[in-house]
Image 1 (cartoon, rainbow, N blue to C red):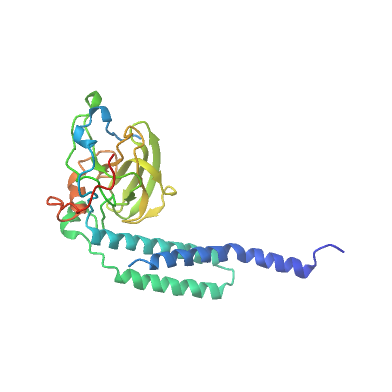
Image 2 (cartoon, rainbow, N blue to C red):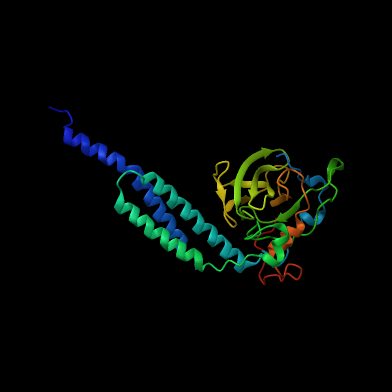
Length: 285
């Protein structure tokens, strides 16, 4: 008397089959709408032996912005490519389910994203980064609180030498993938704190240290130049002085080279004569 009829059971099973793919489609559509709205093991520093100007107050006119127009274009490109990946995953989820109507919606969104992607004014930094093998690149920190300098090989405590470049920024500032590539792994260490390793299409390996947060990623996951991979922090031995410690191994292993020339090229023209924004500092550390 209180059992479930065969018709009711079929209806319930049919609904269950469609729940997951429809949820995936809704996720795709919400992501597309957001995109369309666009107008450790590596060495790190120890503060006990860091020059005083490293932890000095923020300079007047901060933040200092890297090639703003180029950066925004590359970030938008990353958002579009990520959305296209999400649509591809939804197509796989719907395969064999007879969801022709839903598939047509996805195909329409995919075509729209591809048209938008073609219109994004991304100019490959060929003149400045061709020697590094990078087609589309972007500076890894969204905004700085001080201009950076070549601090490679500066002395550190214990007789060590600095094997990277420090990019001082406010806590929570977005950190971006330098180039297209894959997410290798993240680690937690006493020196580098919360850290991330990326492998670029150029074959280079990148190490980001002292992060506050890391975007949820799986090992081997595809990343794109301009995609946010985390935020600036002061984890590890950087307590009280948030910044990104960046290391670069052009041959892809742990044979670290001076990243300053690469970062200088990615920052864009005008770094040497950077003009301070005429407003008070956003924060005094």
